[in-house]
Length: 212
Image (tube, rainbow, N blue to C red; front, side, top):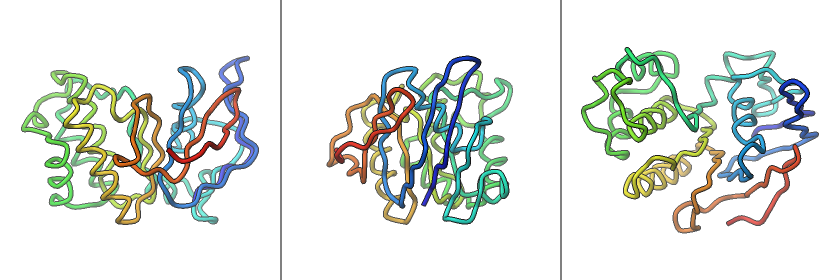
Protein backbone atom coordinates (compact mmCIF):
# COMPACT_ATOMS: atom_id res chain seq x y z
CA UNK A 1 0.00 0.00 0.00
CA UNK A 2 1.16 3.54 -0.79
CA UNK A 3 -0.24 6.52 1.10
CA UNK A 4 0.14 10.09 -0.14
CA UNK A 5 -0.39 12.78 2.47
CA UNK A 6 -0.63 16.51 1.75
CA UNK A 7 1.50 16.30 -1.39
CA UNK A 8 2.38 19.70 -2.82
CA UNK A 9 4.80 20.45 -5.62
CA UNK A 10 5.61 23.68 -7.39
CA UNK A 11 8.20 24.78 -9.92
CA UNK A 12 8.84 28.41 -9.14
CA UNK A 13 5.45 30.12 -9.08
CA UNK A 14 3.82 27.29 -11.03
CA UNK A 15 1.81 24.92 -8.83
CA UNK A 16 1.82 21.38 -10.23
CA UNK A 17 0.36 19.08 -7.57
CA UNK A 18 -1.89 19.48 -4.54
CA UNK A 19 -3.04 16.05 -3.36
CA UNK A 20 -4.46 16.08 0.15
CA UNK A 21 -4.87 12.34 0.74
CA UNK A 22 -4.67 9.24 -1.41
CA UNK A 23 -4.28 5.58 -0.44
CA UNK A 24 -3.47 2.99 -3.09
CA UNK A 25 -3.81 -0.66 -2.07
CA UNK A 26 -1.82 -3.24 -3.99
CA UNK A 27 -2.94 -3.30 -7.60
CA UNK A 28 -2.53 -2.03 -11.15
CA UNK A 29 -3.15 1.70 -11.65
CA UNK A 30 -3.35 3.83 -14.76
CA UNK A 31 -2.61 7.54 -14.38
CA UNK A 32 -3.91 9.65 -17.24
CA UNK A 33 -3.82 13.35 -18.04
CA UNK A 34 -2.79 15.93 -20.60
CA UNK A 35 0.83 16.80 -21.29
CA UNK A 36 2.12 19.02 -18.51
CA UNK A 37 -0.55 17.92 -16.03
CA UNK A 38 2.05 16.57 -13.59
CA UNK A 39 2.00 12.81 -14.25
CA UNK A 40 5.78 12.46 -14.55
CA UNK A 41 6.26 14.79 -11.59
CA UNK A 42 4.06 12.59 -9.42
CA UNK A 43 5.95 9.43 -10.41
CA UNK A 44 9.27 11.19 -9.73
CA UNK A 45 7.99 12.08 -6.26
CA UNK A 46 6.89 8.52 -5.59
CA UNK A 47 10.28 7.27 -6.80
CA UNK A 48 12.06 9.59 -4.38
CA UNK A 49 13.80 11.54 -7.13
CA UNK A 50 12.68 15.13 -6.48
CA UNK A 51 11.89 17.23 -3.38
CA UNK A 52 8.30 17.98 -2.43
CA UNK A 53 6.11 18.98 0.48
CA UNK A 54 4.15 16.30 2.30
CA UNK A 55 4.82 12.64 2.91
CA UNK A 56 4.66 9.29 1.15
CA UNK A 57 4.35 6.11 3.23
CA UNK A 58 4.83 2.57 2.01
CA UNK A 59 3.10 -0.32 3.80
CA UNK A 60 1.99 2.05 6.59
CA UNK A 61 5.42 2.24 8.24
CA UNK A 62 8.13 3.03 5.65
CA UNK A 63 8.30 6.80 5.21
CA UNK A 64 10.07 8.23 2.18
CA UNK A 65 11.93 10.76 4.37
CA UNK A 66 12.52 8.76 7.55
CA UNK A 67 13.49 5.51 5.80
CA UNK A 68 14.83 6.56 2.38
CA UNK A 69 16.98 3.47 1.75
CA UNK A 70 14.31 0.96 2.74
CA UNK A 71 11.72 2.92 0.74
CA UNK A 72 13.78 3.09 -2.45
CA UNK A 73 14.63 -0.62 -2.34
CA UNK A 74 10.93 -1.36 -2.72
CA UNK A 75 10.19 1.18 -5.47
CA UNK A 76 11.47 0.80 -9.04
CA UNK A 77 11.01 3.43 -11.72
CA UNK A 78 11.38 3.80 -15.49
CA UNK A 79 11.40 7.32 -16.92
CA UNK A 80 9.41 8.35 -19.98
CA UNK A 81 12.57 9.49 -21.76
CA UNK A 82 15.49 7.65 -20.17
CA UNK A 83 18.93 9.24 -20.37
CA UNK A 84 22.16 7.50 -19.41
CA UNK A 85 25.84 8.46 -19.67
CA UNK A 86 26.61 7.87 -23.35
CA UNK A 87 29.90 6.11 -22.65
CA UNK A 88 28.40 3.46 -20.33
CA UNK A 89 27.34 0.10 -21.77
CA UNK A 90 23.96 -1.21 -20.73
CA UNK A 91 25.57 -4.23 -19.09
CA UNK A 92 27.32 -1.95 -16.59
CA UNK A 93 24.02 -0.33 -15.67
CA UNK A 94 22.35 -3.74 -15.28
CA UNK A 95 25.17 -4.95 -13.02
CA UNK A 96 25.05 -1.74 -10.96
CA UNK A 97 21.28 -1.85 -10.43
CA UNK A 98 21.40 -5.57 -9.68
CA UNK A 99 24.06 -4.98 -7.02
CA UNK A 100 21.77 -2.45 -5.32
CA UNK A 101 18.34 -3.99 -5.87
CA UNK A 102 19.28 -7.65 -5.70
CA UNK A 103 17.91 -10.20 -8.10
CA UNK A 104 19.66 -12.81 -10.17
CA UNK A 105 21.18 -13.24 -13.61
CA UNK A 106 18.43 -15.74 -14.45
CA UNK A 107 15.77 -13.15 -13.62
CA UNK A 108 17.51 -10.54 -15.78
CA UNK A 109 17.73 -13.03 -18.66
CA UNK A 110 14.00 -13.80 -18.33
CA UNK A 111 13.08 -10.11 -18.62
CA UNK A 112 15.53 -9.64 -21.52
CA UNK A 113 13.92 -12.54 -23.35
CA UNK A 114 10.43 -11.23 -22.65
CA UNK A 115 11.26 -7.79 -24.03
CA UNK A 116 13.29 -9.24 -26.91
CA UNK A 117 16.44 -7.39 -25.87
CA UNK A 118 19.29 -8.41 -28.14
CA UNK A 119 23.04 -8.40 -27.67
CA UNK A 120 23.34 -4.62 -27.89
CA UNK A 121 23.53 -4.14 -24.10
CA UNK A 122 27.31 -4.58 -24.29
CA UNK A 123 27.52 -1.43 -26.44
CA UNK A 124 27.65 2.14 -25.05
CA UNK A 125 24.18 3.58 -24.52
CA UNK A 126 25.07 6.52 -26.74
CA UNK A 127 24.71 4.15 -29.69
CA UNK A 128 21.18 3.05 -28.75
CA UNK A 129 18.00 4.01 -30.56
CA UNK A 130 15.11 5.44 -28.53
CA UNK A 131 13.44 2.02 -28.50
CA UNK A 132 16.61 0.33 -27.26
CA UNK A 133 16.94 2.92 -24.48
CA UNK A 134 13.32 2.33 -23.50
CA UNK A 135 13.86 -1.43 -23.27
CA UNK A 136 16.95 -0.91 -21.12
CA UNK A 137 15.00 1.36 -18.75
CA UNK A 138 12.23 -1.23 -18.48
CA UNK A 139 14.73 -4.00 -17.81
CA UNK A 140 16.28 -1.95 -14.99
CA UNK A 141 12.80 -1.28 -13.55
CA UNK A 142 12.09 -5.00 -13.22
CA UNK A 143 15.36 -5.89 -11.46
CA UNK A 144 15.20 -7.06 -7.84
CA UNK A 145 12.15 -7.59 -5.67
CA UNK A 146 10.21 -4.31 -5.74
CA UNK A 147 6.82 -3.91 -4.12
CA UNK A 148 5.89 -1.24 -6.69
CA UNK A 149 7.06 -0.48 -10.21
CA UNK A 150 6.41 2.98 -11.65
CA UNK A 151 6.36 3.11 -15.45
CA UNK A 152 6.18 6.52 -17.14
CA UNK A 153 4.92 6.19 -20.73
CA UNK A 154 6.35 2.66 -20.99
CA UNK A 155 4.86 1.95 -24.42
CA UNK A 156 6.30 4.98 -26.21
CA UNK A 157 8.96 4.19 -28.86
CA UNK A 158 8.27 0.44 -28.55
CA UNK A 159 7.14 -1.55 -31.58
CA UNK A 160 3.81 -3.37 -31.42
CA UNK A 161 5.34 -6.76 -30.57
CA UNK A 162 7.34 -5.24 -27.71
CA UNK A 163 4.24 -3.45 -26.40
CA UNK A 164 2.39 -6.77 -26.23
CA UNK A 165 5.40 -8.42 -24.57
CA UNK A 166 5.48 -5.66 -21.96
CA UNK A 167 1.78 -6.16 -21.16
CA UNK A 168 2.42 -9.86 -20.64
CA UNK A 169 5.39 -9.09 -18.38
CA UNK A 170 3.35 -6.64 -16.30
CA UNK A 171 0.55 -9.18 -15.87
CA UNK A 172 3.02 -11.90 -14.87
CA UNK A 173 4.78 -9.71 -12.34
CA UNK A 174 1.48 -8.53 -10.88
CA UNK A 175 0.44 -12.16 -10.40
CA UNK A 176 3.68 -12.55 -8.42
CA UNK A 177 2.63 -9.74 -6.07
CA UNK A 178 4.15 -6.62 -7.65
CA UNK A 179 1.97 -3.50 -7.97
CA UNK A 180 2.23 -1.00 -10.82
CA UNK A 181 1.46 2.63 -11.57
CA UNK A 182 1.54 3.49 -15.27
CA UNK A 183 1.17 6.71 -17.17
CA UNK A 184 0.33 6.23 -20.81
CA UNK A 185 -1.22 7.90 -23.85
CA UNK A 186 -1.32 4.44 -25.40
CA UNK A 187 -4.81 2.93 -25.44
CA UNK A 188 -4.75 -0.12 -23.19
CA UNK A 189 -7.54 -2.66 -23.51
CA UNK A 190 -8.78 -4.79 -20.56
CA UNK A 191 -7.45 -7.95 -22.19
CA UNK A 192 -3.99 -6.37 -22.25
CA UNK A 193 -3.97 -5.07 -18.67
CA UNK A 194 -6.96 -5.27 -16.34
CA UNK A 195 -6.44 -2.18 -14.20
CA UNK A 196 -7.60 -1.98 -10.61
CA UNK A 197 -8.32 1.72 -10.96
CA UNK A 198 -7.65 4.62 -13.29
CA UNK A 199 -7.06 8.24 -12.34
CA UNK A 200 -7.20 11.53 -14.19
CA UNK A 201 -4.70 14.18 -13.13
CA UNK A 202 -6.13 17.64 -13.80
CA UNK A 203 -5.80 21.02 -12.09
CA UNK A 204 -3.28 19.57 -9.59
CA UNK A 205 -5.81 16.97 -8.38
CA UNK A 206 -6.29 13.26 -8.91
CA UNK A 207 -9.81 12.08 -9.74
CA UNK A 208 -10.79 8.40 -9.76
CA UNK A 209 -12.51 6.99 -12.81
CA UNK A 210 -13.94 3.57 -13.54
CA UNK A 211 -11.44 0.80 -14.27
CA UNK A 212 -10.76 0.46 -17.98
